[in-house]
Structure formats: C-alpha cells, structure tokens
Image (cartoon, rainbow, N blue to C red; front, side):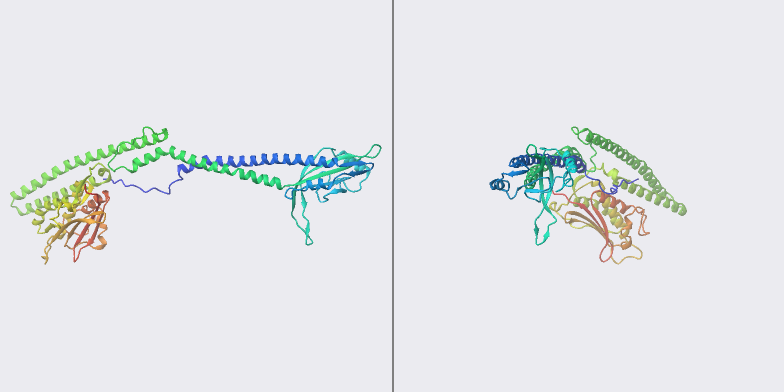
Length: 512
C-alpha cells in the first residue's frame, strides 16, 4: 500500500501578487508625476523669465530715454533718485551699464558681462570698415536677453572664483544729430536671479501637497488590490481551515472568473481524491473479508485435525500448518490495520470526541483473559478513576484502540515468562493521564526491553529487535502511523529497573 506524504515546497515562495500589482500600478504613475513636476517647473520658470525679461526691457528703455545726444556727445539726465530706485532691493538688485561705442564704459557698473554676440566683435578702437561690418550685424532697438555671471568683488587680494548669476538685456541704439556721423550706444540692464530662485523654491514647496496626493493614491490603490484579491484569501481560508476528512467542493460562486477557474480545478482534484479514497476503502473491506475467512477456516480445520490424529509425525506437520495459518492471519490483520491508518484511508475515517481513559479500561479488560493464560499480570493504573478524571481526545476510536491493542500484544509477548523461570512475575501496566496540553497513554512492562540503538529503528516496517515470538515487525509501525495521523507522537524508553515504556501523546480537547 503506497503512502501519500506531503512534500515540502521546493525553493522559496515567489514575489507577492499584491506587491507586483502595486509596483506595476504605482511605478508608471510615479514616473508620470515626476515628469509632470519637471514640466510644471519649467513652464513656471519660463513665465517667471518672461516677467523678468519684460521688467528688464522696460528698465532699459527708460534708461535709454535719459540719454540724449548733443552733437557728438551725450547728455545724461540720470538723477540719483533714479539710481536709488534701481538698486533699492539688495536681494534683487538691478544693475546697469551704458557704453558707446559698445565696450567703452560711460555709466553704471563696468563689471556687467557683454552680450555674447559682441563680446569679441567690438573693441575700443576699430577701423571704419570693421565698425561698419559690426553695425551691419546688430539689430538696433531690438532687445537681446541672455544669462551671465558677474565676478565677485576682490577680497584680501584674491578674487572669488564664483560669481553672481544675472539675467541681462542688451539694447543697441543709434544716436547723433543731423549731419554728424551716427554712433552706436549699448544699454545693458541686469537683474540678479534671487527672485527667480525664490520663485523656483516656492514652486517646489507648492508641489509638496502633490506628494500627499500620491501617498493617498498609493493607499487607495493598495486597498483596491486587497479588495480585488480577497477571493484568493477566502479560497485560502477554506482550504486551510478544512479537516483532513472534508473533501467537499469549495464554494466560490461569486468569485471572479480567474479565481472561479482555480476553484473549479481544485474541486475537480478533490472529487478525484474522494473517488480514490472510496475505491481504496472498498478494496480494504473486500480484502479483509476475502482473506480472513479462508485463514480462519484453515485454522479451524488444522485444530480439528490435530485433535483427531495420534500419529506424532502427522501431528508435527499439522502443528506447523496451524502455526503458519495463525501467523498469516495475524499478518493480514496488521496489514489491513496499517492500510486503514494510512493518509488516504485516514481521511475517510470518522473522528469523534471520546474519553481515552474509558477506552483504555475497555481494551485492557478485553486482554486480561489472554494475559492470564500467558501468566502475565495485566492491569490499568487508576482503575478507580471517576468521570471527572476523563481524558478527552478527538480521534477515531477504532484506530486508537488498534494502536493500544498492538502495544499491549507486544508487551504480553515479550514480558511473559522465559526460560529459565524469572524471579519476578511478568507485569504489564496501562496508564492514562495528562502531559501539559496533551493526553498521555502509556504501556509499561518489566520484560527484557529493547536496546537503545533499536528504539527508533523498530518503528520501521518489518523490523524486529528480537527473535522471540512470531511477530512480523509491523506492530509498532502501525502504532506510529495511527498516532501521528492524529497529530500525536509515540516514543520508546527504558523502564526502571528494566523493561520497556511505550508513551503515546494525543492532542487534548476541552470537556463538554
């Protein structure tokens, strides 16, 4: 009979489906949010530059109107009050410079950087041909906007490598009276980037609430994912909370199509398992009937033949046949018991709540006549226990009874009299009690015991630790199979002063 064992999962569990969905949903949104923030910042900075450029252009034209040509010179009508207005805000200073021809300082701040188009094309003294070509490349009365850096002031004899960033406008103008050669004048007005930087910071600060919206969106998406995956959680709860004997189909009628398909596949598997278990149960029942009946008839016929013959040689042969039939019947019974204890059959065995102490009393009483015939003192400790001392367990009474019978049977065989006669009468004691949160069933004998090296190995099938008796090495294997299938544990240990102690633990349940 094959035993189905639950194989441990190979490798590690994969990434959570909810985490994958959250990642794939939020990552594109986060990227789009960051891209939108960059675009918004650039648009806002562009509008800020437009406002700054408009104010610079207005200031440059106002400054140009204060410069009036007189013959070959200029009349500068720029009172101190106008200068104070331009430089009123120390955090957002407006600087200016007037040069004519471009590059020859006349008025303002000489450190302003020149426009990129004329920084190398004009100089203090040029030839008429060079001046004419330079003028042809310049568009008069057209503003040129550009960014530049004004070097910092020298401190302690060293010039700071860093400078003040500026936004500048350059305005080229023609001046000169009629009849005189026209001249070129460059008006530059600059403004520090303090306001623009402050505006950029305000834009970034104003975008912080958007981060809160992103977090809120993340929470909403997470809750939506959990709600969408709740059918899977309900399916897991149905499977995890089932008893091993419950092979009823899963109920997920309102589940989404994907989960419904998974539930249908599981239900198909459960139906196949139920059919297999039912087939095996029928086979066990048929085998029990077909094998036990002929063996019982053979034993009866050999017993009648032994009583009716006086030939010593024939009696010896009949006795060997009778012993073989007895061993075969015992082996068949144990094999069928082991088959019933296996997982496939244990799933359909009915479990119920019962008193383990009462079951032990009943089974021990049934074995007393046989123990007396074998000369063994068999008894139950605390046989006078009251109903309040009941030990309640949830198990299959038939299988637990089979396990206890196998242990008592072994104890009677190996604790019985030996040759030469023993000084101490053979004894077997059955005890039932509590061990923490578990029920404890013990069978103690004062026989020769089992060597410590063999106390684990004897739980394997067809393994015997002695040559005594007619056993086949299945009794303790059956006990271990039954107890473990009920969530319990079985263990062998040496008794004091000698003998063997078999301890069986089962889960306790509360009294009704």
